[in-house]
Image 1 (spheres, protein in one colour):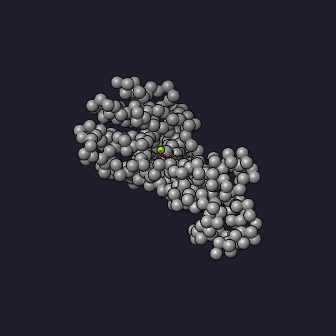
Image 2 (image 1 turned 90 degrees about the horizontal axis):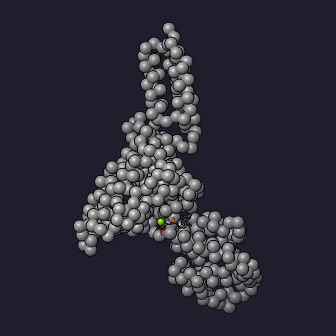
Image 3 (image 1 turned 60 degrees about the vertical axis):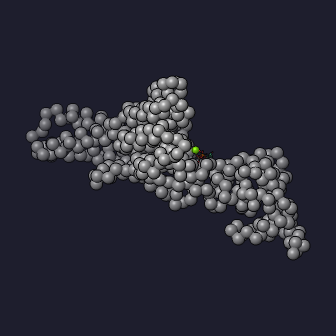
Length: 391
Ligand SMILES: Nc1ncnc2c1ncn2[C@@H]1O[C@H](COP(=O)(O)OP(=O)(O)OP(=O)(O)O)[C@@H](O)[C@H]1O
Ligand SMILES: [Mg+2]
């Protein structure tokens, strides 16, 4: 026997599924199961096919991860949502970043790091499957490494992938000179983040997550870290949290444990440095040997230093098109003492002979004489002559 008004029920379900979320899917699945149990096979089948096509479209939407995070939990954060402030100074405790302010491209890393980072995102697209086996995807991630290695960029990119706005904690707002106020501010910040669907980003995290046994700082640090521990626990099932630090040794061990994932971002390898240079030098293009010299010069520096070198090269290229690459690198080394390795810097700033010799003897980059000569504005035969003179 057909159910009276089922066509209306069906239309309602179809309309709800046009913007599917997990709560809607769950209720329609319940209805389908109940109909089936009551022997209304035809109606149950029709809901089943509605659910199947909705699952498919859900699978394909880029906001799949966002949906998993938003399962009937928080309110939507908009540009009009008031941000909590420090009561004494009225400084905002956070700033909100929406998708448009967040980077589209993942920073340039070694393949294994990239893969590991992508796996965090993929976990969230399998949210339903994980729940079926009573597992929950990672919801917190600590990113640490040297300054200028792309940690903040990475944190924002992850947030962009999740598809939710970022609540970026502002240290100058959170930290108060009044006793107890910092802890209170942290509590308010987490309460705010837990109320809305968002990614909470705690950049320069070490400032508030200091070791509790630091003899310099007594009661207040303990109070702040204890509050932070409770807050991190309260956030566990509420949304994604990212902590970023370049002083990981200063973090309290209990704080470390609260993060499901801990990623160390290393300095770029020579290969990564060349990819970074290519990216930052666009639209300019340089020959392989020229790129190799740039990478050699900036070896063991951070991604931010590579970016500075690329900007320098661009400017030099425009100012003096005829400038040899070795001259360009020399000027950079002269004006960027903190960015170029001390040993390399003294070689770069010495005479051509020593510079060329260091390049020939470097086994990592395996420069050949034909590569080196044009970098110094020489022909290969004049370089050979210089070499034999050196001997
Ligand atoms: N691996 C990388 N790929 C792409 N860009 C990078 C990379 N490393 C650094 N950069 C660039 O260098 C600059 C600094 O990066 P970012 O602010 O993310 O570094 P950080 O690790 O957070 O540094 P700090 O610890 O000083 O805050 C940015 O412009 C960023 O795009
Ligand atoms: Mg940073």
